[in-house]
Length: 287
Image (cartoon, helix red, strand yellow):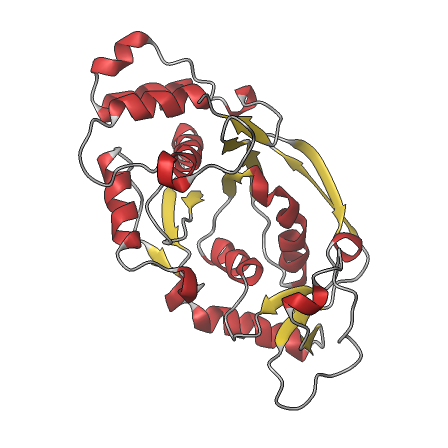
């Protein structure tokens, strides 16, 4: 079971389509189901109409997902229940530190762990993270290890503005949807050990992870959404699909340009081999 979980903060760009394609191919090549989950939990970032545009773009490129689209904004009760269970076990504490106050710290220094915040002060809820080395075999990047306590410190589970943090939501959602394989960008590799730490505390299954090299501009900068956006409507889909297949090391033949999207996907599913992807964190695009 795989999934694609975009944030509806704008149109899909090439990097998002590339990640969706890798996740889709990996699931279908193994006869698995593929889900869509809108990560619309961070309300200030949500752009009205973006989610509908993302779904139309995926349909235009021939993606076929299983079941209904899941929305994080409708799953708050699940997150609250998990947070309450951790709080009952005394594994959390309230923290009034702002980002500005922590800006110079490489990791959370534990400021509020033993000192409750002033009454009435806006406070985040943090998970107490104990020293422990988390290790896993990434299907693309290989062996990865991290001591979360030393690298990150105590993790925010609910922000000072009251919104649930990504790390809590994604762990609960993947478990609730029975996701077994996660294919996503290597920019999230560093956050995976903290998700695994939380999964262990909540007695949840850990999916198998695969972190793709992140597409970047030729100079190594983050992909510019404005110049690399994928049109929601119009324009032939096959040329861009072929470009994405090439970026995924599938070596599409010239004859693929004249086929339908369904035929292109069938060829790519048959050709898929995640072991052919390079073990690197970034993949610069040609200008």
